[in-house]
Image (cartoon, rainbow, N blue to C red; front, side):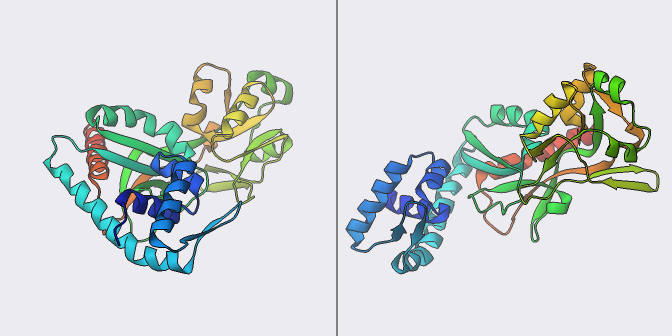
Length: 305
């Protein structure tokens, strides 16, 4: 039975994504086009591949049977097409990275422009999220994580600064009104602006000075989701609402222009930098290999400098 390979790609995309909207986002298509392609595939095959409701799209038994045989074959087709990159002057294709919001905001801006300039035929898609997820869930090729979130059986490559700090700060006006804390525990008497993970867990504030470690559960008038929403805590701190405790690089512009004043810098806790990780037991796509080589080159320059 002959079936247009474009229809097969649509079926595989929807099966991987678990829905038309997400599949459209991953493939750069649109939901109605994918829905029509799946409908035509089902008509040609004579079987229903998905059970659809207003909220879910789930493979039928026939669909699961097809996917168990089809996905490996389609992966081989993709690998064969990607191998053609070896015959190009510059690699092309799509590279998908799953990264924390902090990496997208603080690390990638110094890397991505140069990479895309060197490899104009590569399209980079960055999936930034605060939740730690399996990088392959969204069809990503690699992920960026802190070392405590590295997955097993992954190869890790350093990316970005190797050491970072948390930094506490507040507006000069706020400190003039409420006083400068002399010890981290004094912060329990201040209006803290802090974050909550998607799991519902409040992020502790941890300070360190020599052998002494102080861990606090912040209290205050503003709680934001960990991730891009933390920009709101910075804006609120600048406006004099309270004390913020975030990555130093995140609030450095406000520290540099004086709109925020550092609090207890001798207590700011250091932590190790980010890692780019990937599974080297899979065939490494040419765009990913180009990115790995580019990051290694930057790392060598940083060490030499």
